[in-house]
Image (tube, rainbow over all chains, first blue to last red; front, top):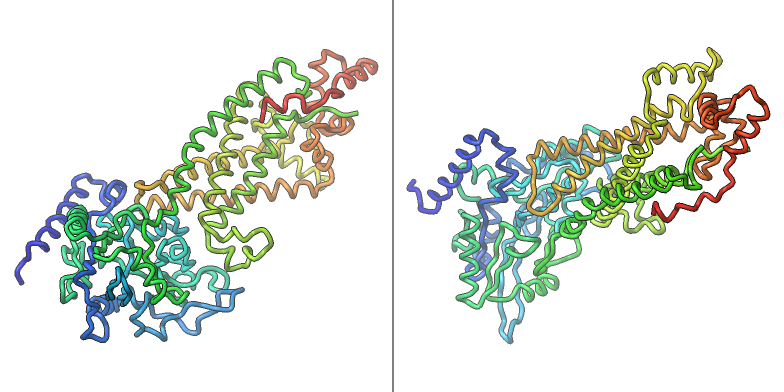
Amino acid sequence: MGITRRSFITRAAVAGITAASIITGAGKAAASVSARGNFALLHDLDKCDGCPHLDTPACVAACRIKNKPNFPEPQQPIKYYWPQKNFEDWSGKRDVTTRLTPYNWTYVQHLEFEHKGQKVKVHIPRKCMHCDNPPCSTLCPFGVNDKTPEGAVIIDPKGCFGGAKCRDVCPWHIPQRQAGVGLYLKVAPDYAGGGVMYKCDMCHDLITQGEQPACVSACPRGAIQFGNKEGLRQYARQWADENNGYVYGDAENGGTANFYISKVPFEAINEAIQAQDLDGKPGKIGMPVNIENPLDEPGKMMSGFLMAPVAGVLAAAVSTYQIMKGGTDDED
Amino acid sequence: MKIKRHNLAIRFTHWMPALSIFVLIFTGFGQMPVYKRYFVDQLPGLGWSSNFLITLNIHYAAAMVLIFISAFYLTYLLRSKRFDIIPRRGDFKESVQIFASMVGLTEEPDNDKYLAEQRLAFAVTASSVLALIVTGLVKAYKNLPGVSFSPEAVFWLAQVHNLFTVILLLSIIVHLLAFLIKANRPLVPSIFTGQIDTEYVMHRHRKWWERINARAGLNLEDQAAQKEAEAIAFDEDGMESNAASIG
């Protein structure tokens, strides 16, 4: 097998990161503190035709084959999330390919709508956006959801408790839960935890070996690209300039590693998704434009942490001065 | 007859942390996905409790209050040099003696303004608060856009923060359980009003009582002078006079 130019660049970049972390001697820790991800995916909605000739789009099928060993095998019978009378179990619906489930980490939204008086068809391969500042990872109560130096956001299935907080705080609600698996079964399965959360991991094992994610390799139209993040971002912007087009995923949630380019504005696409794809249940996801990172708001409060101790010292200085001067409120 | 045990600054540094720690524990616990599952957010007025971002913002705000008070109290201690609550050598032994006296095994020691066990409890509570503030600040820093720590650091930071939460929670429970003991109950009003019965001080806080009198330069044997001392100790002034300087 010949080495294509792109795979050569990918391999070189991965080798570079590995070498750098070995040289610094700090390994994983140092690398993950500074690097905010070197790789990204780019979906060209102009090229994606949703694989009309196939039952399942090629990227979805490839993802399912590649990740089959990672799919959960729950212990039966599955218990309710007491005191609730429910649990999330997809093990009997493993062949669902039209939404995100623990057994289906990418799906294609097929939309048909009118835009500027013309009928348009848009097909959108959806999966984790691998955010630059992922709220799912930052807010994971168990610290088992990490942004890797490569850019992939990964949930550790061995440490995940399945509380589904990551799905709640994700602006797209992407991670999906399977009950009856994972650590919670060993702790207090009746009262805490709910399984393990599953989502796209950017084929982290493949990309660290210098290969492409399965969906990228499988696309028959080259509609999904994988590569250096900065390069793909520039390509997306340039493409949008030249084609009067639009980019999704660069600004959203403060930046992601998953770009979409389209000649139809994403506001129109999101409207069509809301009308044609969503069913109000987990696993069907919208495409809201310019969505803000939920952690921006708490981030703005940081100056309060700096001011609080200063104010405390000043207030005490005034108070002690008055008391020691012989104020009427002093203790005996 | 009453003696002034806690001035306004001290009562303020008791109740503000009490309030902020209550809010911090509630919202901190809410960082785990439990309030929705256990229908807490169905209770009237608590609909917000299952929204992680609302509870995170409240957690930050309450943390700022606690940091403000901690800085206030530390400065107050150092400037006033009133170290009555700071543990002393032999406090552990003395605490054991106090507990032994409760079941009639021995005599209770002469206590100062605070009991030995109160001084020890303060040390545990204060150091837990300090550890929670430090780890909490690092966690808040970690949550900033563009900042990320290694998975190991994130994991251990969370574990230490949670461990000290448990220690603090236990110390609060012990603090409240102490008032099941009848002998401690006259102390309760003083944290609200600042005043404590002179009678009680004379019996249970002998060392403190002697110090108050010594400061007044009086001889304990002299009954008339003692009455005078009590009159001096008796606080007749308004307590709210320096409220503005604290707030």
